[in-house]
Image (cartoon, rainbow, N blue to C red; front, side, top):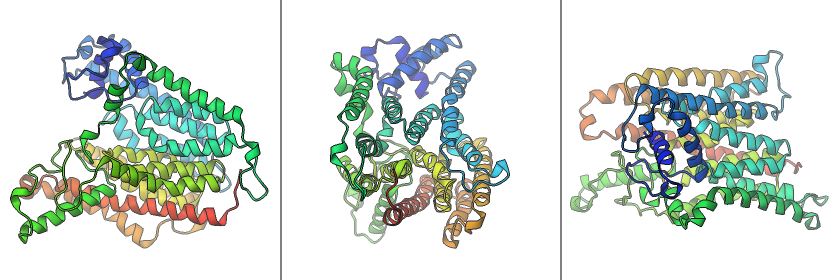
Length: 488
């Protein structure tokens, strides 16, 4: 529905109306490069079914429309495949086994190309995340290959395709300034200020300005930048999505609901003053917490800034080369997922996919990857809720998870267990949670009175695992910064 509507908007309306059209709830809320991408697709779509390009056909879904959209996703995934190839070239293969199936490059290729989350979001739930993640991974690969200007250009283009990648912009900004604009260091690893290259920072600035001008320039000329920005950052949508992303605010909301329930039961709260709308009732809107202080966009911005600050500091003072940049990128994306405003559950892939690169190089990161990917992918289950989709999602995730555990265990067989007993028990309990949510709960009387219970349990339980993985990543970062000399 969303992308069909965007095809219709960009095909039929002049550019000046793209970010004003509101016939449908699926308004255009991506940056201009993505709008132009939809515009280009629309000129191919007309050869499949003209009716999909009619704005008023809000729920139009013909077989030809579905076929075209799925075909377009597969075609654009070519960029993702190429990016994976480039990333595999950057992998350290010291621990490679004799069998090709146990080589880090092969394992990494499977972890990325067969990623369960990306598969269900793009090819079942249907979106265009594959080529966007392809741009991100290709940008990371260029940074590893010390082709810094190409990496900066690709990331700038990516930001103007989808602004959610602003989560990782601090990692790019700090690394390029520290490791590209400064061309030399003192003997003790500190900055040599006389080595600062004004030419290099000018080139970076030109890249950012030219890409931004190409993207936003037409709307600036039309005087529509405020409207575009209001579409890109709709703060009135509320703290959480209809389904709580498994982050810190999910736990915060759950505590507030628990306190409210206890307060009503023991008559500490006035029922007349409790908001009638449920925060998990499927609506995307602003709401007030009942017991705990309500959270504002500014509060989430401050929390996010504080949470990414240590990783950015480590990147500046202990860069540790491209891998230090990659660790910072992962922590920036995960910290933004943890504390951001109106975070979507699929944003967890911004941390899972780049963490794949580190997982095949170190048993420490392999263990963190197994926790984060298993928990993060399980949290995507509510996106596929129809009866025919349930066995499909379970089978696909089971296959991918088994491969993750077996392949990484084979890579690091000399390192011992990748998970401790507590982590193993936590992951095993995802099985009874799924059985309860999909089989037991629908048979109970609670389904009518408390329909949000499965979503709440899934979100809260997965939030615990993701927060744990986030903390382990930070502990690993600090220990490495203290024990490893700066690498350049």
